[in-house]
Length: 390
Image (tube, rainbow, N blue to C red; front, side, top):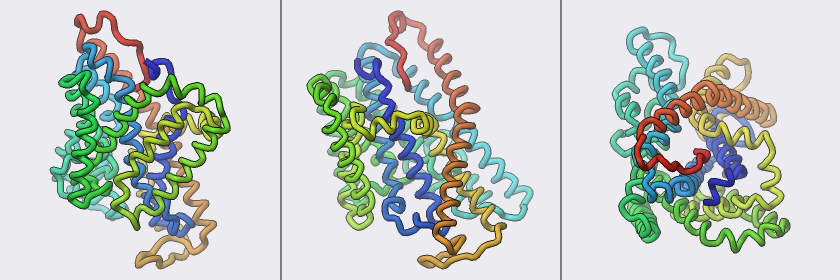
């Protein structure tokens, strides 16, 4: 299988860029900078669906055939659990400690309400602990706000793993049906791609299914398309066109919310073209700094609210004017100084992500990989599939 011989490094870099866009989205309203009026960043939360589409592509690349050939479902889920849960658990415990201190030893409230609400978070502890807080059972975001996507994606893994086992060679039509059904549901209810803790699960299923369909399309056209990949100018033009199309589509999405339903298909087109790594932008994204950001993208996404909270607390104590923008006070009155603060924020997010990647993500992932290797020591593992990046 092609994916087992290729890491799609450029798509890793894209995952890192998408995580940075979302991180900038969550910081934009606290600082007077050029980001405040940049529509692309104001709508960058939609890159969550880029993650979902890419996950569908990668999971089906890695596991569709292996699950069909007897790879254990519970082993598959254990590996996915080990990929997502360790960092989620550590960050959940950090917020829980803060909440308990707020409940039993009230102190000066430094953290802004949009980050962690102190003791008010505790009723949602169990749903977060069991990764159920993105399934529509809670009435608001809680604890580590962005982690609702982790909840939705984990149970989406389980759903599609079961569908592969049930339908095997008929999975293609099932994917089309799932895409149509979830897309119609989100559109008919007027949710579109704006569901989070409430409709985040069907939103994830919709985009994930599009990514899974993309992988099946890729396997059918890859051999025919590869000769064209040697035409660097052609793929460079396609890459530039798709990047501009994504920037435009995301920028105008708030004025055309119904059309956001088509955005995962645009993301899928970009993933398809960049998977060949043949254009000039792919060459740039293949360089080490972008690959590093891609490697720590999950930590970037999970840590962003913590760093945002730290910066908002710090800005309270820094001397400097405030500016009233759209009914709220933000720090600073110089756009360029604000841009420097934004760049510093992004640097801190990436630096913190590198630390948690090596201290939490990698040890947790390795532990569950070893556990999965011992979990199913049966006939299905006598000829295991080649190891791939997960």
